[in-house]
Image (tube, rainbow, N blue to C red; front, top):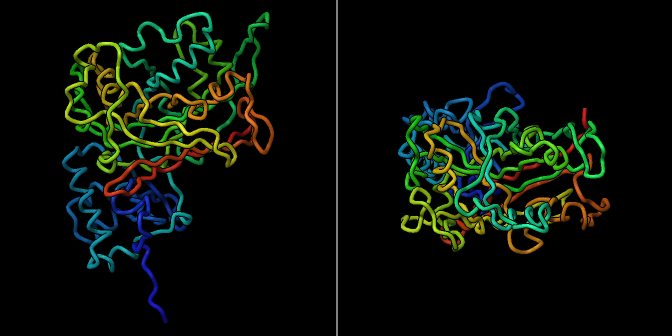
Length: 409
C-alpha cells in the first residue's frame, strides 16, 4: 500500500502554512461543550493545548484553555515564544507522532468566538470612504469634516453583539425617517449594509491615565482579523445627529474565527499614504522605525459573487495611530479589546467597501445573478476574504468572515 500522506504535508505556498499559524477556538461533535485553543495548519486545526501537554511544553498553561484570553494577556515575549514552539511542532518530523493525532479536519469542528470582547471601538480611517460618504450626504459642501485629517475619528460600539463568522444576522428594526416622510416610522431596516474592515485585538492592558505611544503598538496588540461592521443606514441616518452611531450599528458585528498574529504579517508592512496635513506629535509617525500600514487585499462577495476588492494599504490612519488616539486621554486598554479600522475603500469604484458607496446610496444598483441590489435582502450571504504578502514570496490568507441575513423578528 502506498504510504498515506500526513495533514502536515501541505502544498507548496499553502496560505495557512507554518508561516501563518492563526489562532482560534474550536469544539468537536464528540465534546461540543469542550472549547479548546486551536491553531490552523492547512485544512486542519491543531489542538494547541493538547499538543503542549503531549510535548511537555511550559506553555501548556496558556494553551490548554477554553479561549485565547490567557495567551492574549501574557505579552509579546510569550506570544513570540509560543509561536516559535508551534512552528517547531508542525515542521519538525520528530514531533509528528505526537502532533498528527491532535489534528482535526476543519469541516469536522465548530469554531467559536476566540476571545471575550472587552470593549469595541470602530474608526473612520479611509480617506476614500470618508470622501465618498461626504459627497453622498453633503454634495454641496466639503467632503471631509475639518477634523478628519487631524485625528482618527471613531466611536465606541457594543462589545456584546460581536459574533463569530457564520452567525446569522437578524435584520434590525428601529425608527427611520426618509426626507419625504412627515414623521418617523418603526420597522425593519430597508437599507441594511456592510462595512469591510480589519479588526485589531488587544492583548496587554494599559493603566488608566497612561496613554499608549505609537511605538508601543506591538507591545499591546496581539493580532488582527477581518471584520464586518453591519450597518442599518436608514436607522443610522435618523438617530446619529448629534451624537453618532447607536442602534444602526449595535445589532451585530461579525469577526473571523481566526486571529492572525502580527508577526505573521511582517512582510506585509507598508507605508501609509502621503499626508498633506501636519500631525500633532502623539500621532506623527514620520520617524517610526516600522511602517504603520498593512498590505492586505480584501474581497467582498455577495452570494458568492465578488462585488468589490478594497485595498487596506490605502488607509490614511494606521492601527498604531488609532491605538494612540484611543488612549491619549488616559482611557485604559483591557485584554480582549477590539477596534475596527473603519470601512476600507480604495480610489476606484470597484474598491469600495460598503453598499452605500458601491450603489451611491441606492442610485446605482448592483447587478447580481439573484437580481439587482441596492442594499441587502433577506437570504443574502456576505463573505469577506483577504490575503497579504508573506515571507519568501508566500501568501497569508486571513480567515474569512461570513454572515447570512435573516428576517427581522
